[in-house]
Image 1 (cartoon, protein in one colour):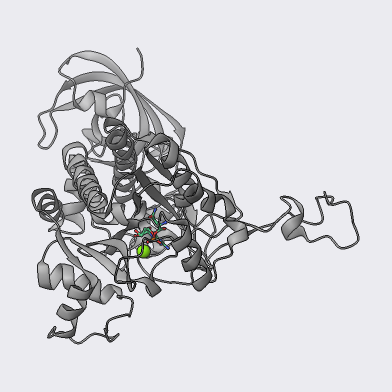
Image 2: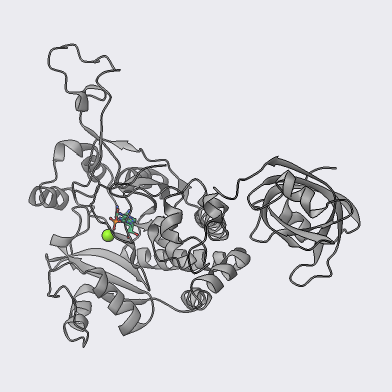
Length: 470
Ligand code: 4AD
Ligand code: MG
C-alpha cells in the first residue's frame, strides 16, 4: 500500500481499506483496553487518530517501544469511520513501527512551565530547530507558504514577470547606509589583485566594495523599463540596530515595479494586492487560522475579513500631521510638519482615528529616499506608505523620479554617489518613462495574517542583533 498523507486520509471518503501513514506522534492517551495515538505529518493542521487495542498493542509495549510524543512512526491499519468527536475517520492499527523515539525527560518541547501552560514563544525562539514541530509554528509555516504562493499567483494572473535581482550589490538602493558588507576570508583566499602588497579584501574579489542588498527596487526598475510590469521577491538585509517586534536584519520583500503607473495606480495596485493576499489566506488556510484565532487572538479572523471588505483610507502626509497635532492622545515623540512618523503615530491613525488601513502619500522630501518623484511644490515627494492595524507600515513605495536632471540634483543634495548608480541614471537618459512601485515586507504581512505579536516568530530563522544561531 502506498503511503498516504494525514490530510489525504482526513478528507477521504473511501473507508474500510488498508492505509499506511508516516509521521510524528503528537499525543498518546487511553486506558488499559485501548490507546489513542494522534499522528501528524505536517500535511495539515489536524492529526489523525490511530486506535490501538490492548490485545495487539498493550500499553506497556507501546511505552517500551517509545510510541510517545515526538516519536517518528509508521502506522499500517484500516481506515474506518470514527465514533469519537472532532474527527470523521480514524485508523485501526495493525502495525506500528518506530523510526526514532524521544527521551521525554530531555525533550525540550515536553517541558511545561509552572502553570502547565506549555513552552513560551520566547523559549521556542531559542530552539528554532524544534519549534516547527509545534502546532503554532506548523500553522505559521503553512500560512507563510500559502502567502508566497499567492504572491506569485496574483502577479502571474495580471501579466507581471518575476525578475531575480541580485543579493550582492555595489550600491545602496535606499541611500540610508544600512548595509552589511561582503568580503572574502583573507586566510583562505589568495588575492586576485596583481599588486599583492596592499590587498583590500573588501574590494579585491569584485574590484569594488559590495554589500548585501537592502532592496531589489533599482534593478527592478531596469526590468520594468523593458518588460513593463515586473516584481521581485527575495531576501533583503538591513544592519539597522532596531530591537523591535517589527524589524529583522534579514527579511523578505516583494517589490512590484510598473512602467507608466503613477501614484494613483500604485495605490490601487497595493490595495488590490493586500486584499487579495488576505482573502487568499481566509480561503485557503482555514484550519491554521482557526487555531491561531482560538489560541492567540480571538479577533484575528474578524480583522482579516474587515480588510477584505473595506476600502483603505487615503490621505496625504500634511493632512495626517494636522490630525495628529490635534489628537487627544499624548505621544512619546512630538509631531510637526517635516518629522518622520513613528509607529505610535501610524497606529493612532489606523487604530484610533480611521479604524481601517490607511495609505499616506506625499511626504516631505527630506525624510524619504532620493529616487522618489518630486512634486511641483518642491517640498514633497510622491511617496506612499500603507499602514495596517497592529503593524504600522506594511508597504513603502512611490512614483519614481523619471527626470535625469531632477534625479541627479536630488542625489547631490542627499549625498548619494553618482558613480555607484551610473547605470540607474542611464535609465533616465535612454527612453525614460513615468513608473511606480512599492515594497511589501513579507514578514509584516505574515504578522498581520497570523496575528502573532513578534516578527521573530513568523520567519523560520530570525536574524536580529546578537542572534544568528541557526
Ligand atoms: O519602506 P522600505 O524601506 O522601502 C523600500 O525598500 C523600497 N525600495 C520599496 C520599493 O519601493 N520597491 O521597505 C519596504 C517594506 C516596509 O514597508 C516594511 O514592510 C518592510 O519593507 N521592512 C522591513 N521588514 C522587516 N524588517 C525590517 N528591518 C524592515 N525594513 C523594511
Ligand atoms: Mg519605509
